[in-house]
Structures are given as structure tokens and as C-alpha cells.
Length: 292
Image (cartoon, helix red, strand yellow):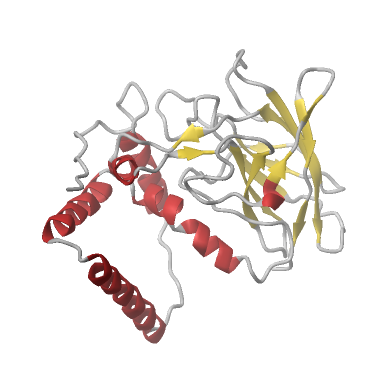
């Protein structure tokens, strides 16, 4: 019978000596819970969506003849996900890519992707040409430079556009979600120049596993799946009067591109950086924004 073991309690992200799923999950939940969201969903629309969702679940129960033991495992696992603070992680990995795909259909500009659970607002403001806050670069990390321009759909430059960028370090950890990483490490909000141009110096991220020692990881292991995400950059690009883009950029030839656990990769979002004379990997990527 399938079992998903309940993880042992782990201290919060502010007290643990090394990153854990519980610490990361708690930080992600706290970041999300700091905001209250509303939607103009009518009672009729809510009723229709909920009814179909439960009908679909009922059909699965009937098709696979779900047993009471399996049901109890599911119920306990759902409780564990909540207690472990992993709802943002679970939903952003397994559900958000479908939400993003549906909502992006009406836009013509740069392709979007999922935001993920590790976004933090109000990262430090940086000039158009900048280096992200980071610890000293070690031998495992390749200096990386991305430059380009933010425009409207007609190619007109968007001066003063903002590019929020955040990504993991060489070990797969995000600042704000692991206790040993300095605040705002590899995060920043870049303001484009008068021609909408930018140039960001950082390090090239590596692939990483989503946290595996919590209930989400136990589920992935029980299903025989892998927990890997390909190396990527997160970006949120915005300008006055324009629809903001939330996206992720990946690297040509990288591991796990065809089997991303979050199903978030797209051909339009691949970077192909080339080394320069200083040993940095350099790439150009431009952003085109739709009207609001």
C-alpha cells in the first residue's frame, strides 16, 4: 500500500542551522500570507468551478476505486502539507503553470512563466547597469551578464521600466528562504535607462531540487517522480501603462529542461549565453510589454 511518511517536526527558518523543507515552506507561507487577495468571482462562477472540481475528483475516485486506506493517507498528507507550510510550494509547482498558460493567451508580448514560491517584493533598487548583491564568487560559480532592452509591442523603448530579478545560488538556495543566505542575495530591482536598456551582472544559476524532506518531497518520492528544476532566472518586468510580465529564463542544453518538475519551461524562454574575453557568460534578452 502507498504510504507517505509524516516528516519529523523541524525548527523554523529563523532558527535552523541549515535549510530544510519546513524552514523554506514556512518562509514561503509567511511571505504569501503577508498579503490578502481578492477576486471578483461571482457566486455562480464559484459554484460552477467548485462543482466541476469535485465532480472530477469523484470521477477519479470511481475510476481507480480509491480505498479507505488511500483516502486516509491523502487526508493525513494534506494536513502535513499545511502544517509544514508547503501549500505555496505545492501549488506553485503543480498548479501554477496551468493558471499562467490560460492567463497568458490574450497577450502578444514576451512569454510569461510561473512566479514560483520564492518571490519577495521590494528588493533593492539598482541602476540600469549593475551587479546584483551577492557573496564573493567561488570556483563553482560562473559570472553571468544579461543585457537588453524593454520596449512596447511596436519597439518603442520603455525608459524607467523596472526589472525585478531573483534566482538561486550555486547550491539551489534563495535568499529569504534559507537562514545561511544574506538578505537580498541575488535579488534586485533594476531601473532601465532612457532607452529602456539594462545590463545585469550576476552568477549563472545551477539546477536544483525543490525541498524534498517535507510532505511535497515525500509525495514526489512515493509517485516515483524526480524533484529537479532546470537552472533559471526569475524576472518581473513592469512599466507605466503596460501589462507586467512574470517569467523565467532557462539555459539551452541545461539538465531537466524536458522534465521540469514544475512544467514551466517554454522554447521562447531559452537563453544561449556565450563566453566573453573576461570569462563571463553573456547573453542579450529583450522584453516587449503589452498595453495594460
